[in-house]
Length: 145
Image 1: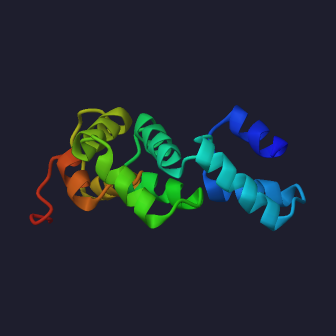
Image 2: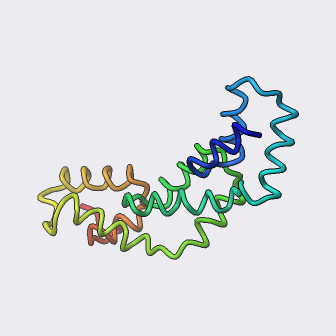
Image 3: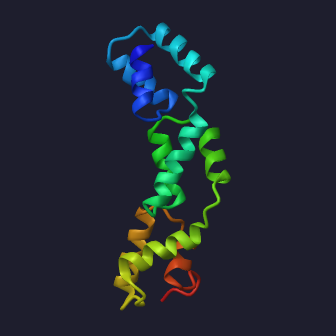
């Protein structure tokens, strides 16, 4: 219990993340489950709260929903928790994509198709959907040269 509380005192963790951390320290799996259940019952451990903090962190970094989803998957959160956190956040992903594009490329239009492709790849890597990217770069996705 002491290792679990010490870890949670430093920062919030997902249940799976804390379980792996305690297993790596050599604790018994059954004891870990008991401790994690106790931590959840006392409110020290909450995957939904942790997922919300991961989404906030992703938004502050300027990432899109896909990147936030991937971060939550990497932390071991359940699909339901991930979905509810993404649906529950009040983020305008289109505005987020536009802000990211403006920060990276400025207000200039792509010089040519190669430059536009570079910008699309960059924003896709940041976790934005194609519709969000089209909005951010201000072009019609159905009117490609």
